[in-house]
Structure formats: structure tokens, C-alpha cells
Image (cartoon, rainbow, N blue to C red; front, side, top):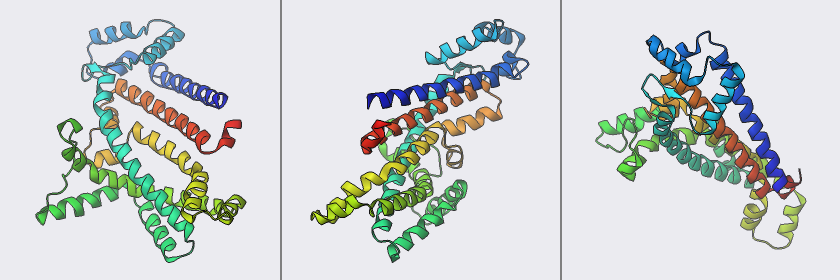
Length: 319
């Protein structure tokens, strides 16, 4: 178990190192004038000279890279000269919004997808199975921006015209200002992401459950007189969750890195919308910081998936 986790941790560190090399080469070696690119179009010569001195751009490339990695390891992702604040401050403002959106939607799509998948697998080719499959494919075919706009039109606009002010048009209300406003502002974005991604989990759970329920140990458990619910949940679902956990780790890591379309549609100033704004303004320090943070989020999510593998399936610990 320990050897398995150490091996996965070393793989994650290797991936992060390769990402830092790629980011450094893209933003610090490729541009002809790195300081000018980082400072922005309207930077003065004094500002450009200060950036060169701070980043050590007059030193050899290998020293610049070590300085870049050292700062990143100590939580220093650079300075945003466009807004005159550290990049970590900008990420710190946007991160709670994206985390709130990602975790709330993840709980919904995981519960909905796994429940639908189990029902479909336990009653294959039944009316419930065909209905849930149709439900999944219907939402799976929707682009996220279209489903979000439909929610805004029917659930917000039409209900508001009818006198039901249940949901706001967009924006974000911090949790510190009250759980009611926080919940109201995130309900429609949660539903948008959950309905889109639940379809994938329904199909994954259904396929894995159908394979597991045909195994010999399931027939043995039933022959011992165990309750059907116990056989399905304790023996069947646990073994079938491996592909679900894989997909969940990938999706959650990507969402924490930034949900660009959903945040833009619902005017949520999270990491996704912050990244879009930084790209439009050519605010390179913020882009670099978000890329590094998003990469670390994906690596950590995959490491957690490997830990879940070892918990769900003891055979994984031997590899």
C-alpha cells in the first residue's frame, strides 16, 4: 500500500516538473522581450527594468528557471502588474467561487449518475432502464452554454415575469454573507453542470454494474441468502466504482482548475472567468499562475483517485 502510494506520488511530482518546464519555456524563453510581455503594453521603461531585476532575467536561463520553481514552491506565483497585486491574491479571490461551484455540482452529478446507473443495471432493458438512458443521452448532447442559457430563460426570466423571484440572474454571493444567498446564486450553475456530467456517470455505472453482477462471487453471495440490496451495494457497487472514481477525479480536477463556460454564462467571477479576462487583457502573470494552479489541481485529483483505487480494490495495492 505504502509503496503503491509513493510510486503514484513520484509520478505526480514528475508530471508537475514537466509542466513547470513547459510553462517556463512557453512564457520565459519563447517571447523576445519577457519583461515587456509580463508588464503589459502600457508599461513604462522603469517598470520593465524593475521586472527584469525581480525575475533575474539578466541571468542565465537555468538560474531563471530555478528562481521560477523556487518561487512557485513557496507559493509565489508572480506579481500582476496590471492590477498591482500578487497573482495569489487574484487566485485567492476567485478560488472559493470555483470550489463552491465544483463541489456542489460534483455531489449532485455523482449521486444522480450512480443512482441512475444502478437502477438501469439492476433492471436491464426495462422501461426504467430505457427511460434513464434516454434522459442521460438527452442532457449529454447539450452544450453547457446552451443548457445554462435555457435555465436562465425559463427558470429565471419566465418565473420572474410570473412573480416568482426564486433565483438571481447571475453573480455570486459569498457564503460569509449568508448561506441562503450563496445557495440561490449557485443552484442553476450546479444543475447545469450536474445534468451534463451525470449522463457520463450513469453510463459508466450501468456498464460496470452489468459486468460485476454476472460474476461468480455475486451468485455466491446470493446463494448464501444475503439480501438483494446488500448484494448490490456491498458487493456489486463497490467493485463497479473503479471507472466512476477515475472519471470523477478527472472531472473534479478540471472543474477546480476553472469552469470557463458555466462561470461566464452565470457571471461567476471564478478561476475560469478570471482566466478569460486575463487572456483578453494579455495579463501573462495571471495566466501563468492559473495554469500552474490548475495543473496542480489535476495532479492532486488523480493522486486521490489512486488512493481510492487502493481502498476500493485491494488488488490495486499489489501493482
